[in-house]
Amino acid sequence: MLNSKQLIELTGISRATLNNYVALGILPNPVVKAPSGEEGRATRLGYFEDSAADTIKLVQQMKKDGKSMAQIARELGAGSLISDASASAAASGQAKSVQSSVSGQGSPALAPFSSRRPDSMPSISFDGSIDEFPGPAYMVNNNFEVVWWNDLASDAFTKSSSGLPSDLSSRNLFSLLFASGSSKSEDQLKELLNPYIAASKKRLNHQALMKIYSSLDARQLSIMKELYEDVESVGKEAMIHFPGIIGSDDGQDGPFDLYICFYREGIFFTYHPITLDDNYLLNFLSKRNEVINELLTKRMPYLTDVTVMVADVQNSIKICSELPAEEYFQLINHIWQESAPIFRKYYGTYGKHAGDGMVYYFFPQPDCDYKLNAIQCALELQEMMKSITQQWQSRKGWFSDIFLNIGLNEGQEWFGSYHAGGHVEFTVLGETINYASRISDFACDGAVWATKNMLNQILPEQRSKINFGITRTTRNNENVFVTDTYASVGSLIDSDSTQSDKFKDIDAIPVTEIRDIEKQV
Image 1: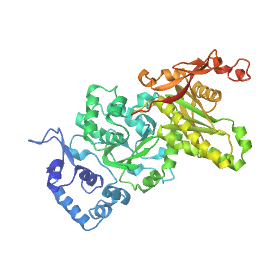
Image 2 (image 1 turned 90 degrees about the horizontal axis):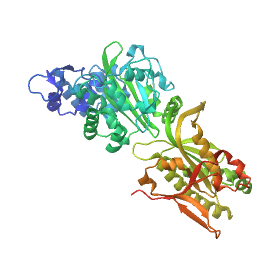
Image 3 (image 1 turned 135 degrees about the vertical axis):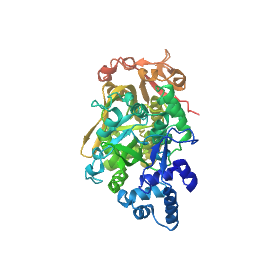
Image 4 (image 1 turned 60 degrees about the horizontal axis):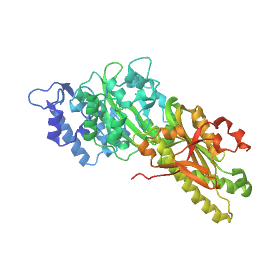
């Protein structure tokens, strides 16, 4: 018999190609056993019959003759095991692969996950639901914390009826993977983690990944570091797959594909048996807006740190009265469209639009401060509004300024969604959003105001780069901007003003005006 290393050397194929041939059924699953003699450091190796080399050479010749992988698989007797879609993906290079069971490093690469047997799979189409996926499926946010999962994923991760923990920070993907594979050898763990490390390299640099998982023990961090350096990052494709072998409920192993879909809001993982026709899955996953909408709709509420931005157009009633209705809507749509890429740039999550105002949420990110993201976003919105004002003043020949008044606040709140039909609206519960809204009402002339609580959450070194403070009136009635200071809302409002009652609920909150921030080099 030939072990996997010998087979690769003899035929000149890559390990990824060997994995694909096994996953597609062209080669049988290898016999995994302890190596004999001098066969390297591996504790176990995958062994193939000597005829496997002839099969691979035949495949290579058939490919030269112009045949597709689907045709080759059918002619070699594996046609009933795969779909044209999965074979084409494997052959085209769009399907990325990492070491799986053929590496001989131990048990199947995708264990400990399990799935329903193919003959008990539900009959579903691309109009089905993510809840009906036949294998473990879950979504992680940009911090690689699991925010949605199906029952099979919960069983695979926890092996208990209680399911995944409600605390978001306890649902670190790699922490769960390490825990579920705790009984495995280091080589087996590496096989399990390979696809996830490859996916993480698309979003995170090494420093950010290590920061997220600083709570892991020394051995686990060492494995993560080594894999990050060795594993090749995935490409720019929005969806990739890794073939491999996973166990089933009846104890039998079978070929599965791990599909990974990349969204701005996070990364979606789902396992699918290639013994099924996966055309429906590819069609379903290709409908990116529908998939992410369903994922976000089904995402469980969770407690998280968040910075809330509320922005309102100043004097919107006056502007509305000066413009024809269709032009007023053009103006508001202009503001929303111009602001959208700015929010994306700083990882803002859409909350809702209420009239001519908007709410966005900024969550912790692995490689940047979410509070600074909100501040930088607000200041860029200021500059955007200056440009929009000039365009509309030139267009209308008027002298009205268009301001977007912004309020920022930070807190720890429950984040979830409301949905009716196809509409999804995200929100946080608690005082954080209420205070941000009231501070936005307090702001005027396009100013950005934030709570002292939020600024205090920023490290001193970073806070020193922010130009913030309070405008004070001197004895000579001159206005002087005093930097690095705060004031309560109540002290900034004339007690005789009609506004004093309007802001009574926030009059004790210390706030400050943010005017600029030193650009990061």
